[in-house]
Image (tube, rainbow, N blue to C red; front, side, top):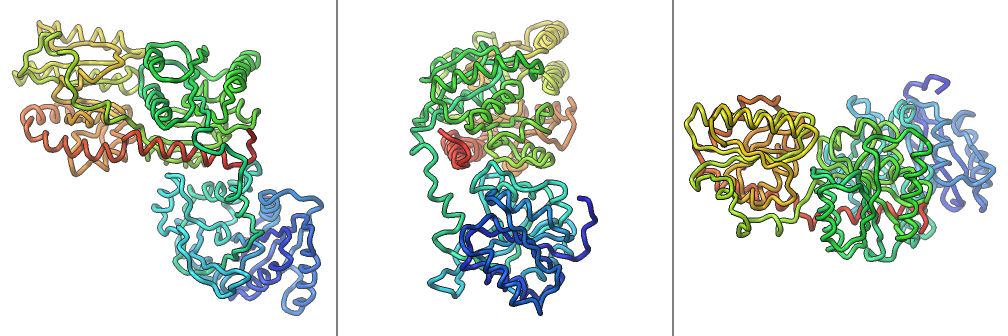
Length: 614
């Protein structure tokens, strides 16, 4: 801003388009506020009715009650739409506080006074809305209707994290310095600009007051009716054609999530196309009823313009040939290209963020995605720090597939492991902090065998850039033990028999969920740190760290793992009931069926942003 905001002044931003019958009542309600340090910024968005005449007449009739600075009328020469008009008003505001107000609604006389006091009493908050009542031309007496308004900063945040809506735009009052940081409304989100702006305010702290200080007018021409009547979208879920894109058919958490996503969408009768580069997991995708395009995506962001254009044209060809109407990306190199292509073709791009390692796109490119999905609470909070609001949909699995079915392979027999021996399993991609976890796991199993005289065998499954390092560490450990107790299995696409054959699983994220599906005790140790044994009383806490993969309460230290693994070995029977509880809890939170519904809802919400065409 080119000027300092005026202390205690409240700038009320009112937009008007063809509200000749209602704008006078709106202005009266602002004039009659008990809080008097107010300026009105009224933006007339090139109305085609007699609104501007009504506004000027109102000013003339009240000239004895107002000073020359009380109301500023900005009469736009052409219609710029709701978001453009609001943004014009925001830039004209001078107050320490800014209040929104729809031109067809009215406010309780105490609204501004109580909201200003609320923010002054709560320095940790920067925005506040309130509950409201509804009236109409036929019934001018306001009545209360259930409206979904939620109270409490954390509860509001949780609602938006799940893709919900619980703050009424017209009731908002916020500190002007917040606008100076986040700017105005996005103009490419027709009919949902106010929702998107509220999500911009979330990182600054937002709450609702329980007092009903706003009166919402229900009438046939109101702007929000357009959202309900929008037909610019596929007529049913079956009309969706989703292109799922990721870098390569590797064996890892992101790729296996994509596999579960594609299978879940197909089971829901959604048309799915997959684009990725050749890799070991491709055969599993071939078993699904979907078309696969091989695209040799790079493993880093493309900087060369010619190379970038080549990839863009490949994606455009797929989208055109398959009549794709929504793209779902998962990784930075391929996903960055998807965002650019979708914006060029005016189709929605959904981007799932699987961890805290998207620094290459989080500050700029990711903000251009239509919708962002986060797989955990820590990822959601991390994105908020960059001004990106997402919807939490966790990694999910088909619990009908991951269960204690009859073993197809006798893993113990193949590996010469006795039936009564204790088998611990570690499964992960060997990269970043998970390589350290793998080394700790091998070291602990080796030392328990040496020091506790326990017949323990370790199974290590996975792939990644550090696989040779882990393989050599297994060999050295077996040399110390003078026998093969540490079994380097390597990459596997099917883990059921290994889960069935083990007594305990050490892992994080998706592996922890799969282990609970098999009723196995889990020790959570992840990319960021150590959580420990999953128990009845800490299951929700473990989810809030994503099993130590996205947040942690301890650093990864072999001594913690030694203590916990030893405890499970000597209390093996105790963990049968605990693991059953874990299975029930995990199924409620991570089963495919409910989470696929959430993703389809996100697809439909993205399509409802009717700037996109099909």
